[in-house]
Image 1: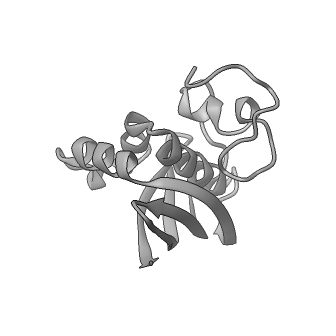
Image 2: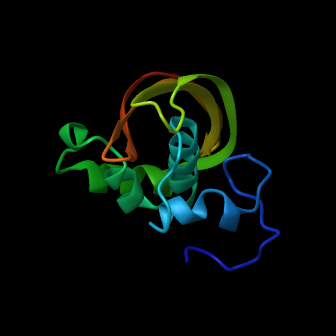
Image 3: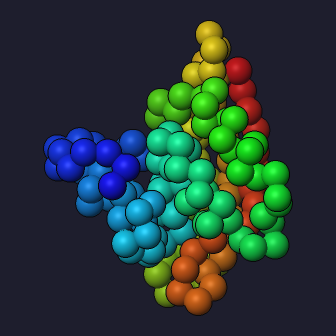
Length: 140
């Protein structure tokens, strides 16, 4: 487990659910995210916890690059993710094969605060959701 078993600890994704019942099962490989939004939330949580392997594993195979692990490790070291707001979802239900999720993720890096706005695209293959790409805007 990434952290202690404290059932009262809220999930970083902002769902108001306990971490152990929300994103942790997906990040730990116990249970795959059931929807595109659930995958997006678990990836946000993985960024906030530094779960680089999970981020790579949940990226569409054709989008993975050899340098991803090093780049992600550097990013999670220098960024503190402090809040997530889901703005919109399009499809991405358990019986869909694609979906899109628009969100705003708030962060701190050094002495700066900012937000990352993204509309992420997801694809389901072999009953698992994967992040494909997204339209990103960062505001500091």
